[in-house]
Length: 140
Image 1 (cartoon, rainbow, N blue to C red):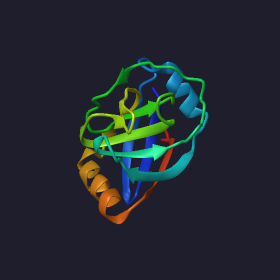
Image 2: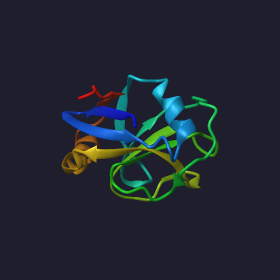
Image 3: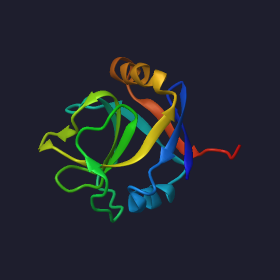
């Protein structure tokens, strides 16, 4: 089981990669680690933030896809109808774009630090883009 440390804004979270449910997505994302970007507030998906990845093609299709992730269930949308992106829900979310409802691959689950999700989302909404880093967690 691959564990990640996710540093988003001032918060540190622990996450699990969903390798049994989304093996191809996890493998593709793991090759990008450490992954650094900006987390911005979503425009259409409700209480969520996102990381736009433009025309990045990871060669993925759908696996373990959902439109209704729970807070802390991170999705990767492989592109197609909309641009490639990572969705980071912190509350009630229906994944969507200007083209309509989307489904993304649930490939990471936050397992500790849930108490910071709402504050992170509000910080992105009211203060702007937040730095985010996904990296392998150190073995304990």
